[in-house]
Length: 46
Image 1 (cartoon, rainbow, N blue to C red):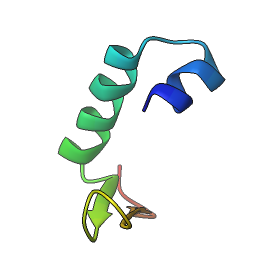
Image 2 (image 1 turned 30 degrees about the vertical axis):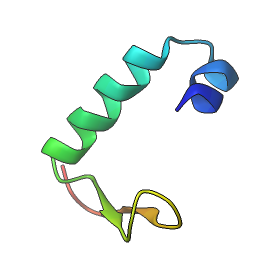
Image 3 (image 1 turned 135 degrees about the vertical axis):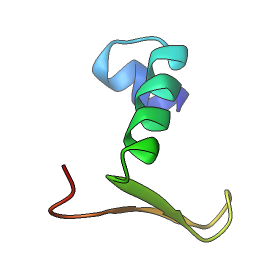
Image 4 (image 1 turned 45 degrees about the horizontal axis):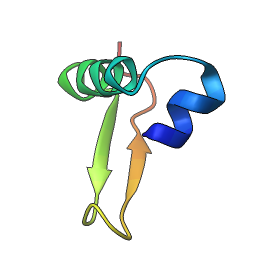
């Protein structure tokens, strides 16, 4: 998350908040473990 925050110029806390919102809305989901897993983008979710 730190790398993503640095790349787009926001705080790590802001990245965490946005990811939590996307998960809550069902727009993304985690596949696999924290290490070695990946994020799946759920197309068509609004």
